[in-house]
Length: 236
View (cartoon, rainbow, N blue to C red):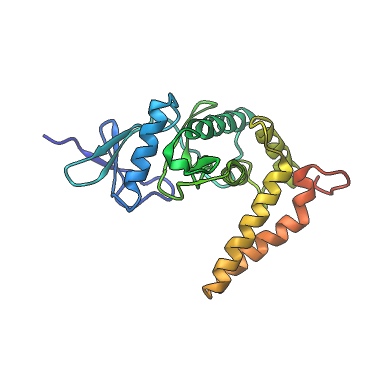
């Protein structure tokens, strides 16, 4: 007798995502084979911070290990310092484990594409797994992936969180990922917001372009504070 399927509905979940026993089943998509290949590589490389890839079931759904723990609700997430440090170290280990993967295709690492508290499983203060690998898995640079992660984990651009606290959290995460700095994070986010704004504008999506215009205005106002540069007025 088949095990019961339990819909996974917390947060912005993929339609059709269910738990079956100790596994997660999700509808296959165009890049499912790539996801499965990377997760198998990570397991072989000794990286234990991702679900194990378990192939496909009789209905053609992708099968992954279910990782027990908590996925924080937000934003803002208001994570503890211990959780921020643990997450940054887990991301660094993930990136390091991808360097030897053929999926790098000559790039620095394989990027997850949507790192953040919403895609991280915690047990207590420890980040134990990165999940939801289908959003933007691609070869790329560490800074691209990490900057997006900092934005999400450190609640950057969130009006409910004081800029000085956002800056402190950014410094904390960068300190736990050697080779990164708050200035690199700010510069990458600025470039990301410009790209997204231009894509929306080119496609005629006025509302989307306006969202990124507001984010770019936020960066212009607060980039020096987030980067920790002298004379910045980021203590409000």
